[in-house]
Length: 221
Image 1 (spheres, rainbow, N blue to C red):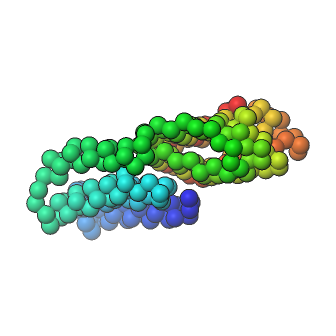
Image 2: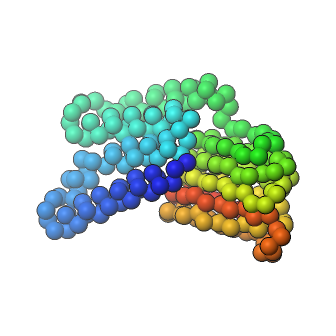
Image 3: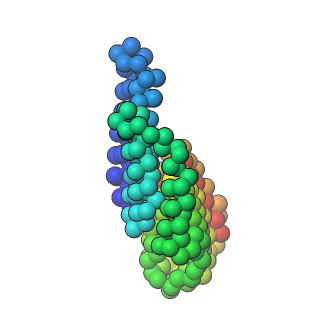
């Protein structure tokens, strides 16, 4: 997960919204009309962020982007149909395709890999690691939840987990003797570190970095 791309997209989006609001305040443009015409771009942006967070699961982000594009064309009067009449049939089709592709919406498994790459998009994923030399990995939750249990894992020195949560939640459970350092950036979201291990230089260190957008990350023992 490339954090810089997410921040660039979000930053540009916020700047564009701010510029439009400023021009509206200066009576250069009618902000209400501007927002009415271009709000579907927010939907397109969400789809792009979902894809960046989990590019291997392209079905849902592609559907969100397609819906945003159709809404945008409708708002600009380029096409003339009621997209909401198509909404639920499309959602049902996407759910069916997602079931076929992923086989199940909720995953629970054990892992002995040193590096984990776990994702949940409109679903849930629970993983229990038993790695002898855990080195970290990537956790992605988009409109879903990821739970990673590391209480049976071992860190030789230091491990790094990169997280990305968009309207989703991530829960990480660690042993009591691990020192956890969080550098996660919350954007309209929250990060809670409930661990109480002594910050001894002899303790294994788990570094958690990444971005949380309208979601949450919880680390506990």
